[in-house]
Image (cartoon, rainbow, N blue to C red; front, side, top):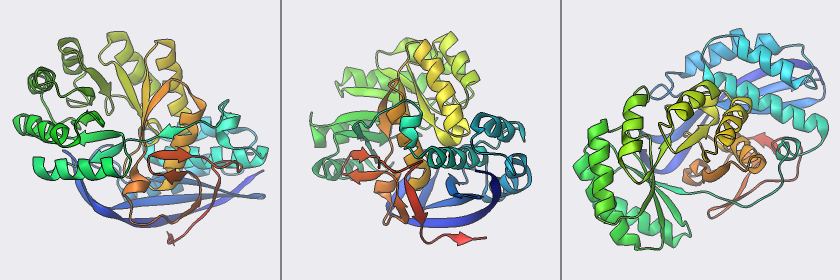
Length: 361
């Protein structure tokens, strides 16, 4: 299966509600779709622009794929997956989402070449994955109403967005917990929105109020590993590192300092499935559990993340709700959602048959 060509396209999917975090607000999923072509079929990948998080724009993503990453793998045989991935990773510095798109498409093709679902080739088996549901950053009463609605739709784990005003954040959590009672597991995501002192004060207030928060994700800026460790050492609640960990090297530093209790793995940060698996190996060696999450992405890369989750037992928590937040699903095949439950098809590769509404460039 020789790599013969590729094409890039734009895809925009409206959201049911505006999605708000401490870093940004958006009314749609806007992403770049990659199709890598071979003499025996095509594989799909994806790379959204994440300027507020990774620094990558639509232009930088497309240029990196077209001028650097794809030329490095063109003409290679998909059966030499590790060589192809190494070539893609060595083609340029950074550009994690662009590399993720190529890496995911290569894994999709590898699965199709071998005629098996990707999670099986990675050593996994079909298992139940239940995603949490994200409650966007709003005023306390609106967040409480959204949480109650999600609970009514069958979601038992809620990720509550906070960040910015740490006093108001405590009120947000009080309102949500008051609305859902003990029926839902609450996870808090500050998206780097607090300083270390604010984080400690906020989390201790949540603990003192008995709000029963399972974990707090990325409470401080991504670069402040010392501050992250300070928060982790100062509170009883588990701390989940997200933007502080892009690579296995980042994971090694975080683990060696014990700067967090868990790691959130995202394919767009890690450069794709290969990078995610390396972080899994590092975390598993240290006895540290992981969550697998997603940015605002389509079901293409979220399906790839679900395959990784099914293949690695060190991943114990799942934040894969972007397709649920979308008003429509243009991806044929891939992961299937039944409320919070996610299942994967038994089709080869990612199990994706095609993608509608793509504006091919």
